Length: 229
View (cartoon, rainbow, N blue to C red):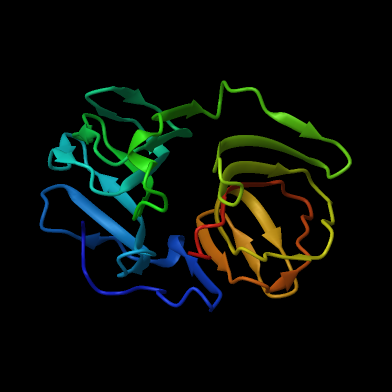
């Protein structure tokens, strides 16, 4: 929607983007700027991951979605024909849905567009989850709480928010189907880097790491699975 140039388009490579150090890029739409994290131009694997900032009163053009669209509100609030969504609200919109995103008071959103993976994507129900009021699952043996956002009925793709407690070492593992993470709060570290609030990173399929926290928790928006198609 925002551009056509590839960004971090090779899913076989890991990628790290500290969005706090990236300038906002103006768009042709008044009052709307973006930070581009990933853009893959492909009829089957195509996806676009961006942070979008709407100034007070700005709106995206009305559209009927060709691809599915995930929205996670990072700051402020945004609304469409179906409701108003405040900070840390997640919305999964299926292809075919018509909506107009606008923000009377201004907002910052994580937005992910993805070409439909399965023919029945347009038949799936729209999902709406407020992470501040939803019930989280506790995993004390891992020192973490998890809020599941969606699970692919075919068994591969998942989305969740993880909140890892302080001073925790997670088991070393690799992501056989790849993983994309956006740091909402805190800090997560591994043998490669420190991932602080506002960092987006993608682990390629099969790359191992052993993440851990120190004196800060790590609250993360995590997506797995769509790199394999």
